[in-house]
Image (tube, rainbow, N blue to C red; front, side, top):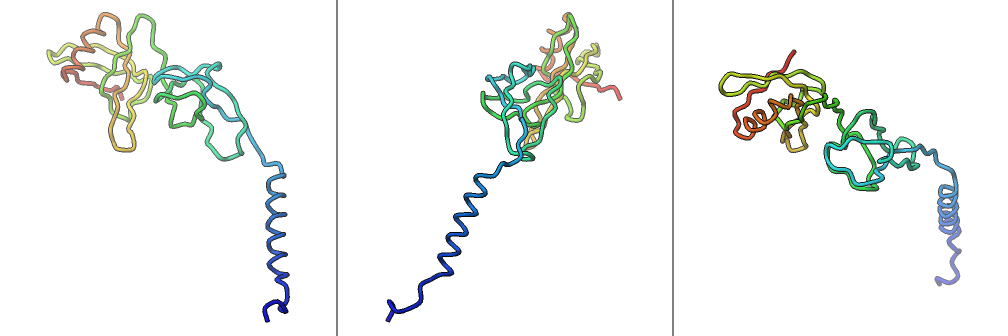
Amino acid sequence: MLWLGRPPYLRWIAATSLVVAGLVWDVTERATELFPFAAVDMARGQFLASEDIEWRPVTSGSMVMPNLVGVTAATAIRSGDPIVPSLVSVSAPIPADSWAVSVPLPPGAGPGTSVRLVFIDGTWTSGTIVQPATEDAFGMISQGLVAVGGEAANSVALATANGDLIVLIEP
């Protein structure tokens, strides 16, 4: 007869222990640290300012802290998104009287590197890499930004659009 059997004491103890362990885990304080989140929507290439960042507590070690000094948004960042290293890129400041032109660059060239932009007719102008080219997960390389003098900006943009520009990087 089933009703004369012994009660399942071990199952009751296991269930009670599991509930108590869950309550203890929930009540204990876990270590947290402040982490940057976007306070406003940011467009690609926008410099991150202190008023664009909101600091929120997150569990310690759950995310990698990015460098936030002199960085721009590598992609569009929505308000409330955590700012992780893959969303920001280091960029050099644009010199005075210069224009930043989108130019195909190799992924290894860093910001601040001097480049020579050679046109199809053999003339050239110099520039400085402001934002390097990046490679995405599919292997597609985006164009970088090069700061050139105002008098050459139109020619560089036109040559880039026509595919008639050669980029030489200073070693």
